[in-house]
Amino acid sequence: MLVQPFDDIIDKKLKKFKSNQSLIKNFTNFIEELKTDDPARLGESKHGVYKNCIGKHLTKSHALIYYVDYSKGIVWLVDLDDHKNLYGRDNKS
Image (cartoon, rainbow, N blue to C red; front, side, top):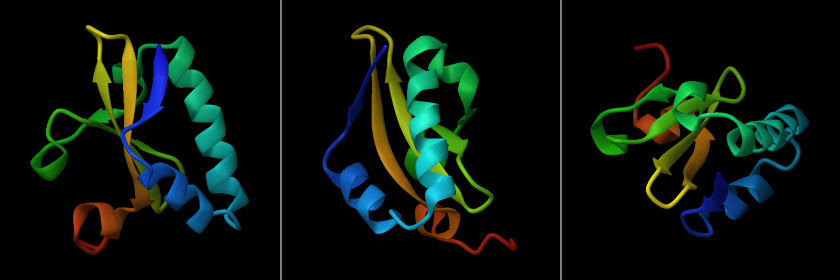
């Protein structure tokens, strides 16, 4: 599968988190996995604002949201952020 950012938000987030080496390493490794494995199998289905998307935890507090377009063979990277920023709520709830 071809992996594409939906827009420049992923690049901005990667720059924002550049000091978080664990997140950057996990992101890079996961992108390689997306190219060779079934992307739907690698994460969990989302609902609400990310309906029809898949989420993957990259660290304890950060996740990547992506959408798989099987008809075009593309994985669209939608967002990367802390859970509370992605889902608009505190992780304690």
